[in-house]
Image (cartoon, one colour):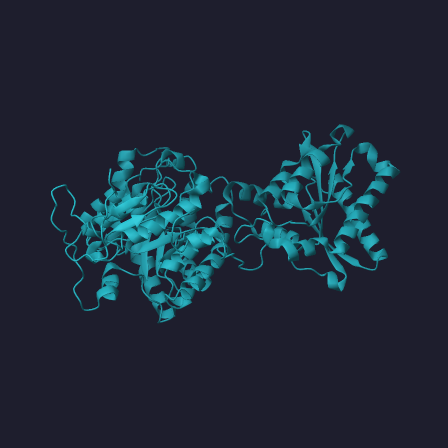
Length: 395
Length: 227
């Protein structure tokens, strides 16, 4: 079981100090937060993607590349990468590059994005969001697996003789999670390809996610990737920890009350009763998190949201200390003791390489020579399958 | 979508947005409910009535509007409405429109919760000048929800309470509701045509994981390009 944190990259006024961090301050802070996650023993750091203020994370692979270069063990991921407004060709290229630079310490989570104005900025239409996401991923999936892709779809210019470079590290594509709140088609796509499914699990009562995860598990088994219990599930969660319950509630309440999205609505206590939010002592956070597997089944990845709603850096780093020292070690032990021993681990680059090659050395892509016009001719790599023939468009 | 019609017991839910306790809106809703029960008894069926006073749900309704979070009392109300064979919906008129609480409550419900359910609409006001609020504002809301609103709308201004003609209108609306409920119309629509209405996955109206796997989007989820 992997534990980590995910950030939506919001830049929010601290309601206690009244200060709003600058973009520069918040970007510096998130790097320290990611590095701290590794230092305290967490497994995963994931960053969101946005294209408007008050967020900063428009270029996740740049941030994650830097974090990869300054960490040793941490898995870098996203929450989420926009599969709608990004060109799937650019996603294939950028994340493949990140995979090489991080030596496979990465995966990614795809989401549609629900900010309507973003779509037209990238030439898209939110009303087509679902078919766009599904078609784009079908293409992305091929780009990482086929040396040469000929492709024609509704939303992007056709591809003829296209090779996405660099080929994935060891020619094993990054593992993909599909994030969705209430779209069975996304769960179906995740199940069809044997990918992971992630339920953000933050804003709504748990009942809401139980059916979608059950559907994903059923379809995962239907497509022959394993049993329902072997499907790869990730969950979000949200915690604020202090030594004792009273301090936790007192410290977090002003941030809860002013939080974007759910602030000014339900009371913190009501929200804790009906969502995964825990605000309390380490033991209270442990107890609540342990209930998740009872609702959703044994799962592979738990991410906590800790750096949002204007919480200052010092507080977030302190939260990570508590999470790493007092919460996650207990969760690891308790979950290991409770879960079905057959529960698979979340796929990593090493496990995917082993699954693909066994004892054989992984394929390394070595291009054929430049023909003189900056292409390699009909076969991109020295060992490309003979049937993978590039036919370039003629003018 | 359950139905107790076999047992001859009809579940009636009365939603009132009256603000005081007791309120004239609730009194009007009670009168309709009593009339429905009496008429049903004459016809040898019976009615089980559940009252939902929206004033008790006010904070949960507003929290649901701004955050999507559905509190426990609101969840209970939604479950009752989803199981109802008939509904009486009553509101005071404020500033020439239904109470914001009334409108907000029906706005946070899933779109498909009330498909075909027979509904009596009722409103109270301090002046007869608001008489068209029921037909011009409330009826369109329930049309959106695809409920079956009975032909007779009820509206009570101060002077109507003592008017025998108003008692007659209550009787008419109650009878229309009883006949629609007894006919099993809503259940038949749902049994025969449920799939032809738009639904959202995990809507409160949906008992089962009924995902249509035979759709263009589901096919696109398993490879290929959009057409």
